[in-house]
Image (cartoon, rainbow, N blue to C red):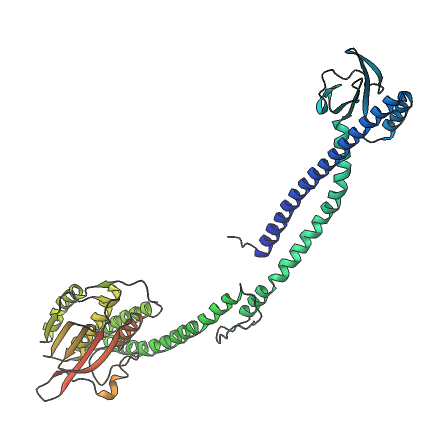
Length: 450
């Protein structure tokens, strides 16, 4: 998609708006000039009629006719006239403008408009006080329009010539107003991706400052995410290097084996290593999916059905190690978390107990409900974890003091899910052992739904 220029859009919109306003103003100016010209010419018609009546009454008709003829030649809007004498209702034309004799009869007194000689004319008719003389004066509309254009156009031409300069001024103003945007873009472009620094620009306009502030607020999260990715990549590379090297050694042993027993044992170790690698990769992928996540729209749900199904699926695993998996789920317990995330967290806690509690251990999975919220816990009577090491269990690839198979990512995943869901991950002493010690317990505590 082609990029759109905000500067070009603003320039075009503002210039177009000014052009429309100018056009409307031009129409108003022209109409006003036309109106003023009409009033001026109407006043001229009444003056000519009054003058003719005055001179006709004094008997100086011939002199007035000569003056009006001369006036018509030099006047931009010539005035035609007719003078009638009315005696015993028998009208007699005394004088008329050359070429305009014979105005149509039936003209109304005062102002009127009608066709004459194939054109539109403006008429004014007046009578003398004694009622013996009737004066009709007229002007062609074409001449009146021409005078209105002569008055209005000189006013519009300078404004028309100014339009390109107005557009140039608009372009300059928009360019200057958007200068801070360009400066901000250059500052962002100059940022070092390895060391992101907040943007400056204290004198930014109010419309751009929120963008700068939002960007600066984003930088710590981006920096934390980048640091987390770098740390995750380094830790994963370190953890993957050892099992890969072990797989290579076992493969070489199988390749060089001289007996079937030696080859079989080496291949068995390869299968065990592949299983361990598969588990490690699955946990890494799960952690990668959880890490960039942000709290989404979550609703309350009952986790008991998911826990019952999950424990039923782990019963065979517990039986293989002679472990007892006891499940106690309180009814009508509601928690606020994405169901998929809860299943991931619960599966990791139960798998940790099955893997690290040892042969013949007892494991209790509980979901309890109280006034302060629901609590999901997994406790065992295995070897347990010393108090000094519990604080480090949520670190990536931390496995405590145990020789059991594992990659040390399960509790990191649970901790991250708890952080994103406003839950709390707690560690404590587990079930009592016959020797007087205690196993290990991990629990997720949820606040009551709002």
